[in-house]
Image (cartoon, rainbow, N blue to C red; front, side, top):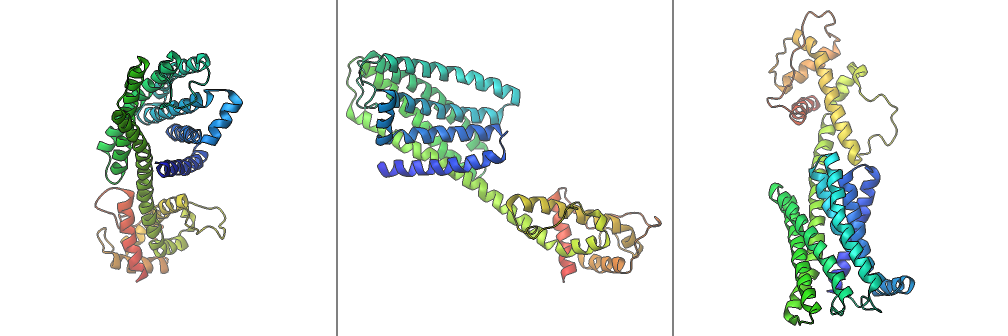
Amino acid sequence: MIILQVLTGLLLDLSLVWKIYKLCKAPHDRPLRAVTLCMASAVGFFSLGIPGLAKKVTAVAGAGTETLLQNALLLCTAYWLLCFYVYSTAESHRAARRVRMAAVPLAAALLVAALATATAPGDTLGGGYAAADMTVPQVAVFYVSVGSYLVCALATASYWTLRYAMMSPRPLATGLWLAFSGLSGMAVASAGRVAFTLVRWRDGRVPEAASGIVSWLLAVSVPLFVVGVMCSAVAMRLAASRVWWQHLRTYRRLGPLWQLLHEAYPQDALARGSRTRWHDVPTFQGVHRRYYRRVIECRDGLVRASPALAGLGVGPGAPPDVLAERLRAALRADTVDQSGTHPAIPIALPEEDGLDADARQLVALSDALRS
């Protein structure tokens, strides 16, 4: 279990670093901000589970403080997870109102836990859940308030995760199903702990087998949720990488057509800034911008050259090899019709709509120019 906890903490640390990087690039993205705060709270929760750090907190702030702080971070983790779903599904003004409403039960649970910690005798909250004396009312109230909020928050988050998993395609759905399983397991384990707390409060005895099952379920569910979130993020990144690679290939294959049209109509270039030696470095976002720009510039150039092509007898349905030969001839002979004798005609238009379909037609023409 210790190895599993270490791996979970490491995954959370890596996830937090990545989310902070993304948030710095998009500071006004509310769902991303909620996920980042969720990860930060989870990292803080796991960090306070380190015995050495917990003892230092106790020495500085007093007995029971490390338990209160750790559970407060756990509640904040669940709260910010709920905020992520709210920001992702509701309009801006409605989301803000629902987030404020969701903060009310969180504040109530934290207030009850803080009062219980302040009034608890001695170090009765310092030994963790398993060793806590639940016959002390403050201790029982502390764990009931924390557990009750967790059950409600985790059950709600499980519901939203299930909805997204059912609507999403693979492999994104696989990660969401893992996250749903982890959240559901944590909700069930939290409900079990609330029930055990009530039994122990009345000086009852919880069977060791039941307590062991709940502890095992909680220990497995947390890393399962983290792995599910990581799998979803990796699946989205892989999908984005495939699109990036496709745009990069298309951008390069459009080179011959773009070069020919750019030499004839340099005024149609959308980017007029100075080029640097880093201009052709294929950065992630830069590839998409240059792909869209190149497709648009090629299409604009063909529209400008279409009257001349019409004068050479080229029709709308001309195949790429014929169109490539006539395009070279038209531009080389400088026969662009400036008098308006021939109207513009559709050149290399796709049968279906969409920029990517247009790009495929332009690539076929560019490949014909290359041959």
